[in-house]
Image (cartoon, rainbow, N blue to C red; front, side):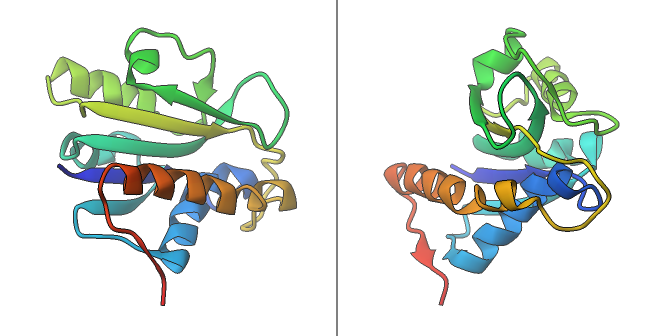
Length: 160
């Protein structure tokens, strides 16, 4: 089984880059086995279809436009995507992850398990740093994802 942790976002628009900052955080704080891949998907949209289709389990991390307060993190699973139950539009990438997953499903290559952690941004201002509010969410979300991976049998160690 291969697991992909996929961070999406635009690093030039503060909180829009949350998913990419999340991948960087994981790389700095943990060591992962070869069958767990961390991937900075940036704003590539459809160009990363092959990455998603090669995995059995995908954790997506991105900002979302949803009801709630800045910093809230919502979790959605594959059925939420495929049955159109997401009450949100993910971040404004040219072609979003939702569309990529729909294409993969049509091609019968969609990953078996997909989990989206969508965070509500505080700012889309120009800038390469996260707002302090969202920067403060990185560690907690990392601990959650790492705990799930460990429960699935992966050996994940602290970075040296």
